Length: 316
Image (cartoon, helix red, strand yellow):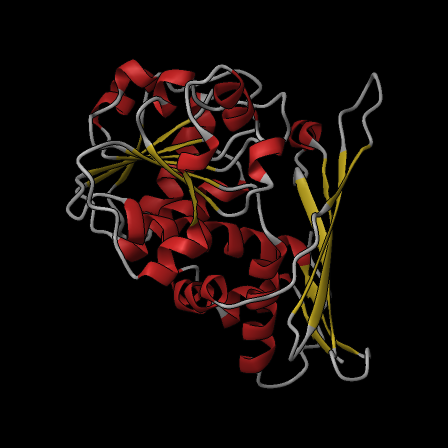
């Protein structure tokens, strides 16, 4: 069995290198049961357990076990941890064990980059990333892989954390700096990527440019929201999976109030299959909650290009 640890995932694949494998995966047909979602919360500590299986009729089986403990950040620990097991579809034998946190980080950012390639303005100038957790760095990398930006802004509730993220990314030669004021940053942005665990909307539709592209990642429960209803009103909306319609507060609440209509929401896979870029003169929104066949596609890609079973220990 191949063992791919946290560092090996990053040696084998960049976020940008996963865009095309994911494009093919979303246009193909994998079986993806609804993920099991368990609330592990206590009065002292919120927590979630996710079980995400997927398989291809002609190939591999994969399952990811993931946990989300938002308060881990206060202890300097990752909020999201996971393990991924890839199995043979012919015999059921284990083919690979992959560090699930690393896989999730690169997969999540690559799916949003793929959506931006289809939906974002063709010549944007300013990218705003809202959030300073582990994902923020990957999302800057992903969006830069599919579009050129004159400026990249990073905003977080803690300005010192935003400054650290911006400093680290600017060291790679990217035009990144911290934003002091969220409203001003949002008003200047052509693309806004939200990677937070916010319970209340951070972005207001009144701040946005008419053709702004919103990339919403953080909300995966009905109680979580990153944007207000006005951000969604009149927008062209796509999702990675229809499960998002009943899991994310960013969709559940506007749907319940009639701000948006379910029959006007597109699947990312449908956009890819139609081979049409979204060039509408209106706001676009991509909402992702994570889908297991994307994890499977990345796991298969990693195992195919892994030269030999690595023997280092997993990190994180």
